[in-house]
Amino acid sequence: MIENAILKNVEKLPESVKRSVLDYTEFLVNRYAADAAQTAKAPQRGGLGIWPCQIWMSDDFDEPLEDLKDYM
Image (cartoon, rainbow, N blue to C red):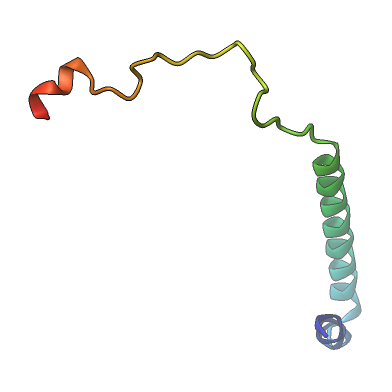
């Protein structure tokens, strides 16, 4: 559908502008092909358990802070 609309509009353009349209579409194809390749090669980020024994949390993490007890 959209391809037909693009082709109809390109047919109305002068030859010099058609060349510019071709250059631009080739640029876009190369750009998005490179982006897709980089996305495919990107390392997967880990989820749960990626840093075992590296991070610890205090036992009183959920307790109110001493500095804020006056406001409670």
